[in-house]
Image (cartoon, helix red, strand yellow):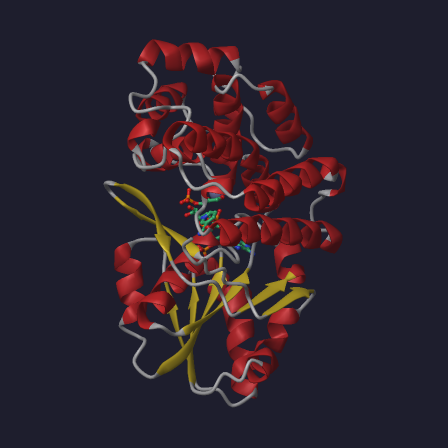
Length: 347
Ligand SMILES: NC(=O)C1=CN([C@@H]2O[C@H](COP(=O)(O)OP(=O)(O)OC[C@H]3O[C@@H](n4cnc5c(N)ncnc54)[C@H](OP(=O)(O)O)[C@@H]3O)[C@@H](O)[C@H]2O)C=CC1
Ligand SMILES: O=C(CO)COP(=O)(O)O
Ligand SMILES: [Zn+2]
């Protein structure tokens, strides 16, 4: 039997103001040498600067770089800063973390993940979602050596980012169904434990929906822990399969064609309503769960015109063709897509 490698972070710090301990956390992790902080336009001010101040207090020499997209060009921009760097810290949303993760993997440099929002489950996963005009790729990367999740920053982030993270987790329901289908039809590798962890996380999220409130530290902490556990399912599987199926293909298609895409998790949530209906499952349950967490359930709430929803549905099967899902090899016709979106009241 093939051997299997599962990467886990060595230290996970979740709590108010933990970003101000970045320097001492790096000392504890025995990081020796210069450090690069990767951030975004907003997140450099919100979190990046705190990490830099704390590192400088511990006498680390620190450089920083800002990125705006999760693309090859952004990875190259980070790469140009990496001579003499021993550690990269990604302080920001999902795009920043994916770019920092991939750049660190390419150069075999340690990586710390410091999310400023609980908006996606890539915080600890060993995969990076990288986009180009042709599509979206789930690339193998390393897991972070450490996670620093500052719940004071996360609770003060726009509430829709927190809701988006919850919806990304709810979408695990349809992702696991697709994965099981691929096991049955294509004999794809399938991990019972990864699938069980992914589903358990989604169930717990829905059970605790009433506790997800704006600005509360407890809510931020709860969602971070759920994203962590969904990310661990991805780590165990060694693929994003337990958390990404046809509903994610739909979201990646929207990212490609919609003039103004919504947040990743918001689109995956709506995708999950649609795909659960295609899968013959209880789509009303997914819709009601999303409503409970105040996530969008319609094209109007996503602020994306119905024509783009239909177009994304008809092209979703062309994204990650190797990932078999309920969409099959031919996908949906335009009329089938319209029927589906109308039936589920997405349009
Ligand atoms: N690798 C994996 O396993 C996974 C990867 N993903 C990927 O993650 C990405 C989605 O992540 P998401 O975070 O939704 O999107 P972004 O990284 O685009 O972040 C959304 C916006 O939120 C801003 N932001 C972040 N934190 C704060 C804050 N505290 N206060 C104010 N604004 C803030 C960002 O600012 P700024 O401009 O500074 O960036 C950005 O403008 C997608 O590319 C998706 O494919 C999703 C799930 C799993
Ligand atoms: O978003 C993910 C899980 O929530 C995984 O990302 P991919 O769809 O890019 O594999
Ligand atoms: Zn996702």
